[in-house]
Amino acid sequence: MNESTERYQHMEWFKEARLGMFIHWGLYSLLGRGTHVMAGDRIPAREYAKLADEFNPERFDADVWARTAAETGMKYIVLTSRHHEGFCLFDSRVSDFTSVKTAAKRDFVAEYVAACRQAGIRVGFYYSLLDWRFPGYLEREKYKENAAALVQQVHDQVRELLTNYGQIDILWFDGHWFQDKLEWIHSKPEAMAEFWRSEELVDMIRKLQPQIIINDRSGLPGDFDTAEQNFQDRWGREDRPWEMCQTIGDFNESWCYMRYTPRSSRKSVSQLVTQLCVASAQDGNFLLNVGPKPDGTFPGEDIDRLKGIGEWMKVNGEAIYGTTPGTGNSCSFMTQRENHGYIFIPCWPGRELIYPRVASNVVDAVFLRTGQKVQASRDRLDRLVLTGLPEAPPDPHITVIKLTFDGPLVLKEEQDQAAWINL
Image (tube, rainbow, N blue to C red; front, side, top):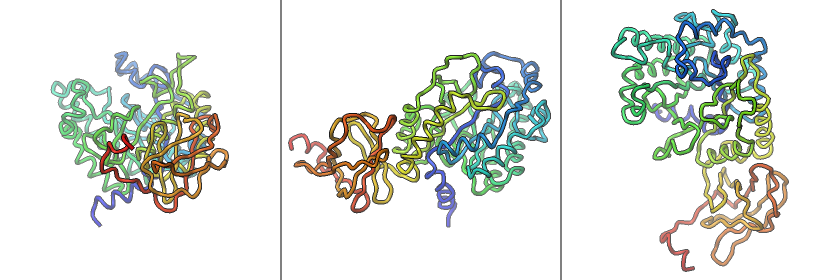
């Protein structure tokens, strides 16, 4: 068995999971002005470090986090073990800037890992390569020794994370980019890989945790692509496993708790469910972010949305988990598994729904929400037509119709793509 085959087998669970939870939590949560507040507000490292004396989240309960994810229908979690600020939520021998060596005196990563395993949730670590406390990150040529020390810290801490906490399922890199050369993310990834010694880093990771999967933010392709808050990020790369990470807050930088936004704009349950469905129909995963409060609890507004998604998933989850792309029409799209097709309808079509190019015969069609039967037949143009639909959709978010075919879904080939015009 070659390496690529083994890597694909290790990713089977990821491709079937479809829905995960992202958690951004750190010292920036105390300030409540975004994860980039240290650099964005030019807060000196010594001043910023004082926040660690205040970070003592007495209401943190990793079991509640993991249980909430499971009840939402999520199959894995990715936690920010260390963000760009350099503060570690784990014990590190190469840094004193950790939750273990400051006010909290706790290894939050260890508690998180134990809770995920107890809940049957796959474990992921987010780890930022950059650390704003190092001048060598922003001025690589001017502070060469400092830049080298930063890179060595990365290698040492990744080794710690993958040695001290048992089997880890995902390593989610970030911060590989250069602030002064952002265009290099796409044009010169090899330059970033060289700076971070990424080939050496990944080789170490594979030896420590052969089963782990790695995203594409080290300057190397990794195992899956990372789209951030939109689907356009993956144009031209449709042949690779991928995941879209998304915020609940309806603001591009709302990854963490936003303290000073009392009426903050958040995406609705319907918006988030729609994005989950679109990702699944494009053979991707949806990693939905939550920004816990400084005390370690999830904001109530976020919990409301997670509960809404969880309720929808209990009814419609079979249309998401372990499915592959199907086909689509003017107002809906489909996933499939074995001899079933699942039609997601974000735009209600009225009394009938027409699907061209479906060659398989439908032996049963029902609404997943209500179990109500849907009539399926073919019209004179040999299109699949679903009739007798209600005036309004039965699901408050996205209605799903489950089709049972007489075999796997087969689509008709169109030799002349314009032929339908004159039928």
